[in-house]
Length: 457
Image 1 (tube, rainbow, N blue to C red):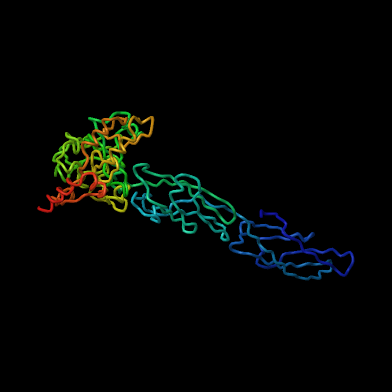
Image 2 (spheres, helix red, strand yellow):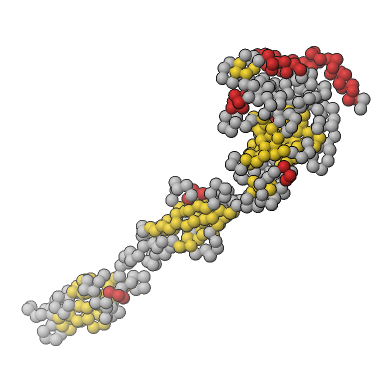
């Protein structure tokens, strides 16, 4: 209250009618801070600067009243000081001296280097902190309402955004609020991941077919992830492998990838080591293309006409622009992206090619030709089109497809597993996914001779 504010009055009476009374402040803790009107008895503030409920909640005033006969009387009066809102919440500051940054590999709950701090000088008021919901960047972080410590909610992606700006709100118990923005840098700590593997053909596949199987990128057929990864690919002419990465990649020296880097290796049961590969890298779409001079299983020796293949990419030879090595760890038949639970690792990927295997069970049988015939004269835009029956990738299923399937009937995938960088794998006799009853009925003699030949080895 300012000086002059009336905070109360004192009333006195005298037995002698007509006697006037005068009032005087003679003592008490409020002497010097308050005054009393000698005639009216009103009490007023004279030194407002000392009124602070946070330090002194009340004052006493000893007041003397005198009549015309100089008779006196005293009384003690208490003045209570009521706390009012003298200030509100101040704009939050960052009291953490650490840099405001977080790695994109950090787990939920990791501090980002910000501790918001706000003040309200009213002793009776306290501050809580919050991040306004609904703001894109705010939703990526959390703040402790009491301590003001900011943490990350989940993994971030430095490639998508190298920094985020949050807005912290400080709220006082008196209802006042104040806000402040803070910028958090995101450090690139995770290596590139492999997001898909596609196969294609530049010798047979037509644009209509490629558009049908890959409408987004017009490259080739994306090999499924999970359990379907090892289903055989039934197409002829496969001579391209497209490997997509989550971000831009370079070689171990930070340079553009070329053939000499030998970042990728290809192995198969029938070929072994494909040797130095011709590769091409697209730094816009982050796609590494492996170019094969001869299509996979272009020629064959009965009874094997397909092949089991293995792609190997060395994590030490591929990094992102920040120098983080490839996060390529892959669980064949399970993974959907590489490195789902790791930070680094070689890419070791398996797939199978079996031209003519429309049913994708590892052996070409009469039923595969039946499936092809059922879709004959269909196109990508018309009829009961089956992309797996369009074994030459022409965009239409015609007699040529059934002829190709017929040429591979009674052939199957070789046994064993492809070699790897560490050496050769054993090739064993096996039929993968064979419908033995149909094979017996259709090609009994060939089947018996095949097993006899391997049994003698």
